[in-house]
Structures are given as structure tokens and as C-alpha cells.
Length: 215
Image (cartoon, rainbow, N blue to C red; front, side, top):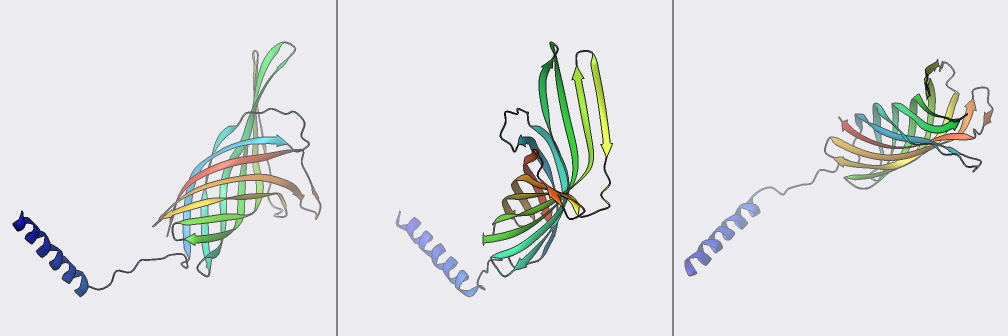
């Protein structure tokens, strides 16, 4: 037993001397570093009635893919603009003249969130800010009885002032080059492109999970 204790003591003493003679280990903090990144993930979206009337719709899954730039403003704050191709929409069921039907709407958007970032620690960021969404295509699938139809409509985005203004926020978990993000967002109003705006009755809301890689 005494020999074991002696061996442990000698090993501990040797390790202590080695650590004392080696250079000190420094932790890398990347919060003040500029990053470019790509990301991809999934949306779970729905619509809600802003007037509060009874409106029931089921959520619909879609995908999101795009890129981002993380711009530091000091150690704890930054700005993170992004551009994403994002699928949203909803599902709805009902009956008409005794027959059941199902409608699935898929909307393809180009989303441009401009987020303020608060970075209290190296591996965790809180983000929130406005988002401008540009509708590129809408697809409605209808199934009822023996009838199945699909309608598609494409939209032009030549006027950048014509968009849907919304808000989005969430958190990013940063692990070296990898970023896992969780977000939620909702529409606020339509910008009509001529300087006017209106508040739509039915608005998109969504949850988003993404995995990114930053350079």
C-alpha cells in the first residue's frame, strides 16, 4: 500500500512540474470574429386569424436553406443578416355538401431577417429582429371526393419594397464551426411597394430549426 501511495505521489509531482514548465493554455473566444455561414433545416408553419375569429388549420412542414453573416459589434453584441429560401403554408380540412375535403397550401418565400445578436457567452447567442419576406410561388392542392386539383401561381419580386414585414427571434448554439439554431417568427403587415401598407387578416407563423456551418 505504501508503495502504491509513493508511486501516485511521484506521478503527481512529475505532472505538476510538467504543467508548470509548459506554456499556459488559453481559451479561444470567437465572439469578436466575423463569420460567413450556410445553414439548412426545417420549418413547421401555420396561419392564424388576426381578428380572433374561430379558424382552425393544421401545421405544415417545409424546408429552409440559405446563408448568413455574423458581424460583431464588440464582444457581446452583433448583427446577423441572413437570406433564406423558406417553405411555409398550412393544411385545412372540412365538409361541403356532405363531402369532406382537404386543402394544402405551400408558399415559397425568400426571407431576409436582419437580427440583433446578444452573446452573453461564447457558445450561446440570443437573436431578434425584423424580417422581410418575398413571396415567389404559391401552390394550392385540393382533394375532395373524386376531385383533385392543383393550382400554382408565381410572383415577381422586382420591387424590393413590396414584401411581408415580420418579426423573428430565437437562439443559436455555437460549437466551433457548427451552429444549431432555433427560431420562431410571425408576420405583421404587408408592404405594398408604393409606400402604403396593410394588415392581412390571415398571417403566417412558424417555428424553424437549422444546422449551419460557419467559416
